[in-house]
Image (cartoon, rainbow, N blue to C red; front, side, top):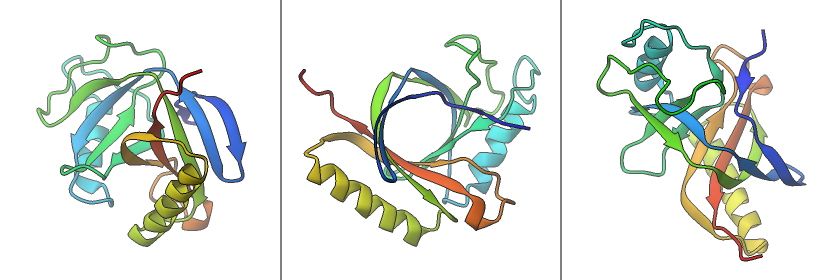
Length: 170
């Protein structure tokens, strides 16, 4: 069964690098202790499994986002497209927050395999070098986007690193 993915408009592709435009996304966000994602992932999974004030189950979507460039690492589930701000059930767990990510233009690098710290460091360096060569300025942290469940073998996993781009004067 296919999992709903966060929709975007592809603006440009250059090998494994892409520039995309995302409409606003609604996220369920939780603190995380490491990129293994078990503590925060579990809280978010419980939330979408019905541990919310409406006792409503919410479909799993992709990608799962990790913001690891901040003092407090977070993990986030993207809510399905049919949810708007104010329509997502309120979490029972106080460490789970609902927030809207505004529309934004991002640069992404797509890579396969397990998202190990070494793999992330290599892809991060490649993304930053590509952005520098193109004279593109970024806003905010780099995020890890994972598209597959943990039980999928590494060679079949799709991962991405995203970073928001500054608006350009046209």
